[in-house]
Length: 108
Length: 113
Image 1 (cartoon, each protein chain N blue to C red):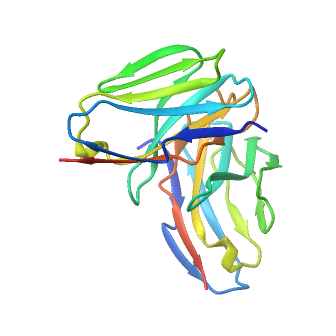
Image 2 (cartoon, rainbow over the protein chains, first blue to last red):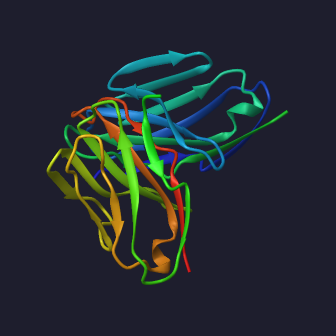
């Protein structure tokens, strides 16, 4: 079974700061997902990556397949970015394996 | 609106009671799954289905049953509720290849007393 580790577990940032959340996994994958969960809320899919880099607004996700590592970056962070960010991986037809999440708080 | 609909949003059960958590999607997704989310544990897979009539167990299946008689619906049954099943439950769906993006339901917060 793939082991997915996220760091940091908790992160507090000032508004406007550049934020990086890391995800590493133990076994080769076919796709990696970044998800967002606001307090008391549902789960929203942000990105799905199999290689390279994707950008959506202020969010950037990168993946290095050889190093088994992905990063999620948030530029010009805002209090509305406060949420739990979850990394999940899959290999072919196997179900998603999730990391435990990174709790981000952005202070105005 | 297209998406994954979970009902109920909140439920309190007494130990030993049974109930069914409903999950329905209208995107013609073949792949559906149930997860539970507990503090410090992350999301853990309970059961999943790759199509109508096909189900399989995940990481934590004990105490739960599923069936998939249609593409749209994937109910989760708690046979005899226990306090250890107090959790937030999420249903998710995807196209047949899990490498495609997932759509999650809004969750069911279940308390067993």
